[in-house]
Image 1 (spheres, rainbow, N blue to C red):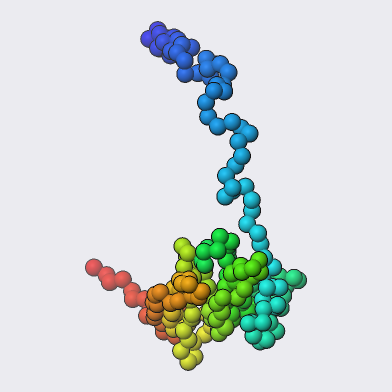
Image 2: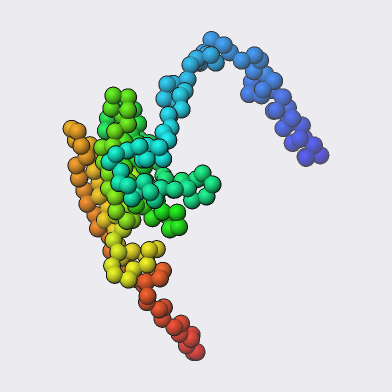
Length: 201
């Protein structure tokens, strides 16, 4: 009997009050932003993409060696990574292009392009093995792998991380960090110690 009384109270509570969807009535139209309001400009238009391969191949500052090495890995897939971001303050996104090798995905050249007179101009370039650039909160961060004699490609001895900032008309070095990697992991040439048997008590 007590259970029936509790059930009756619950159902009575659910049918009263103004919190249910049946009690709300039609949606109000005198508040909020109209559904026809335009979306913000920052989200309404997609970022214009560039043909990174054509940009590299038509750039006189890119070496013939890099251009010759820039070939499709499979079908029409070229080994290039492209990033867009604000590095030089033009109001138009700058473009960072990294050219890689097909087999090991090792960077062989990194470039920054800035829009000037409605054209992309090369304002930064490094061409050497194992180099790669990224955009980090408005800074250009260039990572260079450091190899000692005998290091396999997958396991460099360390790396230099250089941070550049745009000043006036060029990038200048703002910070430099060097990291040494342990030889005790991966294929560093140090064999792991033999596991010891648990002692018996």
